[in-house]
Image 1 (cartoon, rainbow, N blue to C red):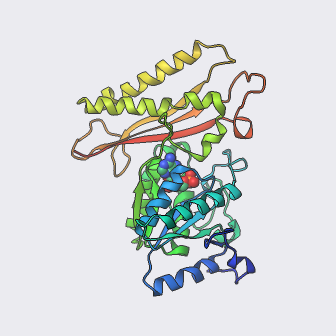
Image 2: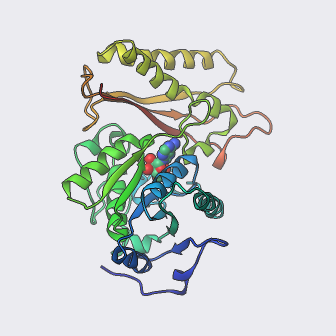
Image 3: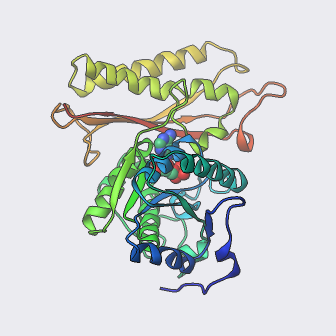
Amino acid sequence: MACRTSSPSSLEKIPATSIRVLRTVDSVRRWRRPHLLDRRTVGLVPTMGALHEGHISLIRAAARENHHVIVSIYVNPAQFGIKEDLASYPVTWAADTEKLARLDRELADDGANLGRISAVFAPTTADVYPAGFPGQEVDSKGSFVNITPVAEVLEGASRPTFFRGVATVCMKLFNMVQPERVYFGQKDVQQTVVIRAMVRDFMLPVEVVIGPTTRAADGLALSSRNVYLGERRRVVATVLHRALSAAEAAYGAGARDRETILSAAQRVVKETLEGQMALVPERRVMFEVDYLSLAGPDDMVELDVVDPAKGGILSGAIKMLPVEAPREGEDLGHSGGPAVRLIDNIILAPQ
Ligand code: AMP
C-alpha cells in the first residue's frame, strides 16, 4: 500500500488539548502501534464532520469502552451520487475541533470513562484512494466493497453508489486504524446492517457498536444535513418521525401486518401534506415521500407480517422540496435551501 512519508503536520494537535491531528495513513499507523503493543484498546468513530450531538453521543460511548478514541472526519466523495450535494456538504473544521476539545475536557473530568479522544484522523482523498479516486459514477472502475443484496434496497435503490462508497471507505478506515471497536449510529440503520454484513463476511477483527439515534426535542433526528432546511422546513421536517412513531404505535397496539402498520404512517403523511396545501405558497412546505418501509432487522427485506420474536425495522425517507415563495429576509437554510433528503427509522425490538 502506498503511504506518504512522515510530514511535519503529523505532530499537529487541536489547540489546548492532547488530541493529535493525523492526516496520513503513515501517521495513523505510527500513532496506533504503541497502543497495540501496550494492549490499549482503540475505538474508531467514523464521521463526515459537521459534528452534532449524534456524533458526540457515539464518541462518548467509545470513550466509555476504549482506552483511546479516534474520530475520523472525511467527506467521502464515493458515497455521493453525481447529482448529490458533495460540493455544498457542510465543512466546519474549526467548530468540529472546538466541539472535540470541549468534549475531551468533559471526558477527562468524568471518572466513568476508560479513555479520551486521542486523535482526529482527517485524510485527503489522495491518501484514501492511493490509485486515484475512481469517480462517482455507477460504472466507475476501481477497488470497491459491494455488500449485496442489502445495499440494493431502500437507500441503495434511491442512491445506487451510496453503500458501495460507505462500505469501501469503512473497509479502508478499519484497515488503516485497526480499531478494536467501531461506532455507528442507528440513525442510518441500513448502514449498520451493511457494516455488520461486511465485518461478518470479510472476517474483520472488529466489534461493531451501534448507538441510539439522538433527536431534537421535537423528535427530528439530528443530521448534518438539517442545516440545509431553514426555519420553515425545519418545523415540517418532523413529519417523518411522527409518521414512523404512528406506525410503531399501531404495532404496539397489536397490529402485526404490513398494511395496518404502514397505513398509520401514511395517514400522518397525508394529513400533514393536506395541512400544508391549505396554506399560501409564502407559508407552506412541500415534501415527497421516497419510501416508508417495514423490513426484517437482519436483511432489510420488506415484511408482510412482523414476527414479534424477530422484530423489524420501520424506516423512511422524505425529500423536503425547496420553498416555493421565499418571504423577504427568510432564512432558507445552508446553501440557499436546496431540496433535502431526510431519513429516519424506529426499531421494533424483538419481544
Ligand atoms: P455522518 O457524519 O453523517 O456520516 O455520520 C457519522 C456517524 O454518526 C454515523 O454512524 C451516523 O449513523 C451517526 N449519526 C448521525 N446522526 C446521528 C444521530 N442523530 N444519532 C446518532 N448517530 C448519528
